[in-house]
Image (cartoon, rainbow, N blue to C red; front, side, top):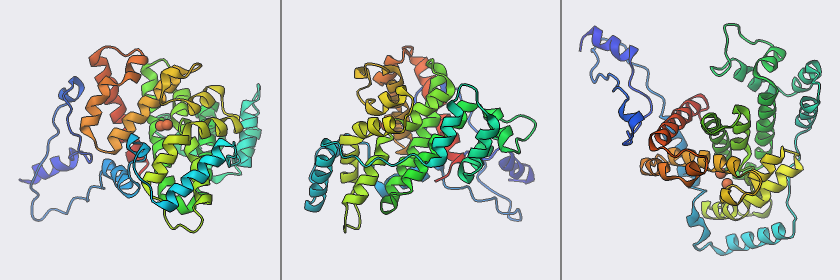
Length: 357
Ligand SMILES: [Fe+2]
Ligand SMILES: [Fe+2]
């Protein structure tokens, strides 16, 4: 290959993500990207591609296991772990949940943002006390989602650009992160819960556009639907006493059994919107959610998509077209289903690239 070929590989690099084509119209219609196998001997070495984002998610999964599988409902736990599960069950059934407090800055910021007439100056003053929220707002305001020609360089500009609903989402996101950081001894599990919530939120926002949800509302539904897991990680950490590690089987079973009831409790305690309280307490059996079944179905679908993609389970991705949640959300046409799944995949990949874990 000559210089021209090498330039082509620079201009049209092979995609970092290995995307296995599913038998579907959207993927079939993609033009194959130009690849080049060779490189002139005197050419500088091309930059090494970062590990694919799919493999980063898969690596995290490999460390902590697949926590959301039904297989955790059965199977033997060793003695200390089954004792721990029993202690946890008793505490949860008697209503003794340890619910983390919403951080004080978040409380104040939400109070100010929820007033009928918002004092942006006061909101800026409150949020400026929190460097994490401040930098996140600036990052989002200047991201492709909101970017204009002029950079938002101040917190006030960032808030004005993205709007109060998006500010609220960032505040909740930061509150989740700070609560998760308390589960230090279960750091790997906390990391996966965090990755999952952010990724599901991005996918839900994408799906929401075609299923009748407002963008930021859909994001919040995805972000917070599994918030009960945060409560459980905190409780597991307290109950593990001198155990050095907990198995994915135990954490998975705890999540599977209790995360919806814990989710309803923390969402109510944090005074989240009523729709979120409802979705956090019932989304797996979304059709039985009496008040917000569509929002629950959106959360379920977004989570299923993230799960299959993060497991690199292409067979599972193809099965998503049969998902009852799609039917429930009114997407009946098969081509429309594939298009939606494909759009969600692109969003998932874009999110994973911008938030490497
Ligand atoms: Fe869930
Ligand atoms: Fe979920």
